[in-house]
Image 1 (cartoon, rainbow, N blue to C red):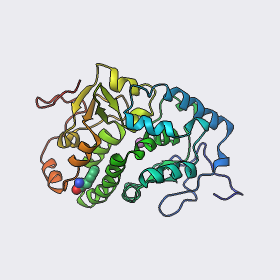
Image 2 (cartoon, rainbow, N blue to C red):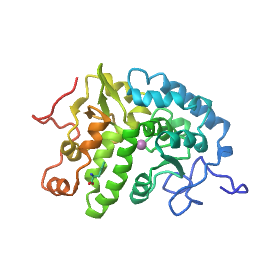
Image 3 (spheres, helix red, strand yellow):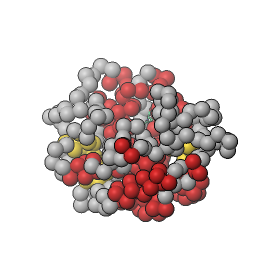
Image 4 (tube, rainbow, N blue to C red):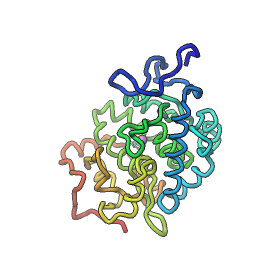
Length: 283
Ligand code: PHE
Ligand code: CO
């Protein structure tokens, strides 16, 4: 960012939220750390303190371990600091972006072990709930999972799979896999079911609902079932898919998806609250 023209991490006047004025062709920007206001730093502290209380017993152990190693209590994270830790752990690197980026740009970053993180933080009115990914969602929800070697490899494979799905016109099916794993995934552990999905981990209410409430259905992960399932973006999930391990997820998604996409084109979609006789319920 130019020093003479400070970054704008507040309201924007155009449709896409965020400051897209001075980005590189790959949509990356520099984090202008000094542009965060005291109110924004304070908001980070309050978001962090509320959410960290909810992690024990609800998030998977891989997530918890990584979160503990991150100095998020100090304030809005600096990309450079987190990148030194993350690079040493799994070779992933965070890149700052103005907000949502086009699908192909996103996949290209993932395929090269770069995770795009939004530079702006939500407004006070969005403290409890936000529709778009902001800096808190990305740092708190996604970044700790990138410290797990198997999950890190899965994310890269997903990026490569995204570039391929785009060529095959099959993105809608692959997007559901992202939704039900990376954003809203649950994992079975010896004692109970825990979350690893970033959309759950960064949500003050859904993190408890996802693993404790009797309301949602928790269905054993099945790749084809996941890809057929529509999802809701405006409410808590009605169905979660539960993996046994990150290795199971990685292995299940290893095969060439091209034949699967051809089969999916012949099958009806399933509503978000679908009940299938073959569903295997967990817990
Ligand atoms: N195996 C998938 C394909 O052929 C690639 C992929 C891997 C997609 C992991 C998502 C997650 O397209
Ligand atoms: Co996300």
